[in-house]
Image (tube, rainbow, N blue to C red; front, side):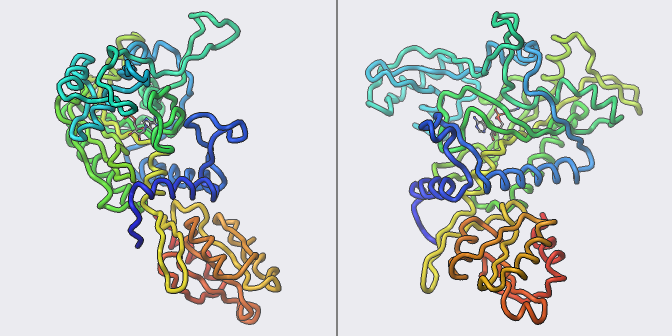
Length: 460
Ligand code: GAP
């Protein structure tokens, strides 16, 4: 294991991600678009693997949950009901001296990482800044304008008219697509409470301070679950989902020492929430929120009942009791999980003769599962046969150029867990060597056993 500094690690990682095809600067040939990123051939594979892993554990294997895929553009009344229209905004202020713009809550949290400002009023934010003499990070001045709130939702128009009646929003979270479908799903699946509805999809926020690569962007993907339960059972389910999410992160290979659970203190909690825990990850730039797990009580369904005038109560078939279910919501960003996995996996190792960059990604989320490498070009025909067969089941790479050692390094650097080498013995006995990325150990296996071996190896 190398001991490069954490600061340096972020730069190395971004460069590596950009040069190897995980993530490119968005619209790069037009000099980019600030904080927009495109996932390259490796990135899209890894991102899909992360989403598939979440779907497998949260929808397929979990006995309570089903999935949906709702529209990005929703009736704008949804966002009035939730308070996003008018309420979903960031506290901004400008430095009077150098005129740079800052988020008041972020300045406080950078000054004192123990402070968490969710739910603070403008007055509380400003008082803290003044009392502690917090300065402008760009010029050191203590003179700021008053705090103003800045709307975070992207607005557009639907149809040909561009007036106020045609205003619609790009959803800032996927959760509301689930809440508005609660009755549809319950009715059509005949699920009994407790049950959950999950979905994966894009969300958009006009963030003021995007940054740290793909950590905070304006267009991102979320994997959200809304878990509906009987009132007063919510805190038990809250514990269940906290552990479930943490286990998921360990299952996909994140290191326990880079994870911590942070419970929000009562001052930070939204007024309707009975508890919120963030699972934080130790990114190279510091601890940051990865996954939010919130007990949202019956707030969202209650608001939608009030605004839509539709009854979203649940009738318990066993007790004949009617109630508005309580909700526990584990919500996580795909891109943030992707970044955490990259940070955790990236390493530079000094070997006997050379140095290697290696991504110790869990095989289930690694972009390619296998690389097929003919020892020399003369073995291409046999190697292509192996590659063609394995490609039916797994994402495989094929590489014939350069020394075998160099080809192993290339695969290590993009996290391919297994390299299969076709050599001259293969022509006689139909066996190949399989090299393990992490240990670099090699074993010999018959080609007929490869599929079963790889399947086991990449299992979650
Ligand atoms: N429905 C609840 C909700 O959206 P959130 O804490 O605002 O809660 C949940 O977002 C998760 O979505 C975060 O923990 C983070 O992983 C991800 N996320 C939020 N804003 C993001 C952004 N601007 N860029 C990337 N990921 C973001």
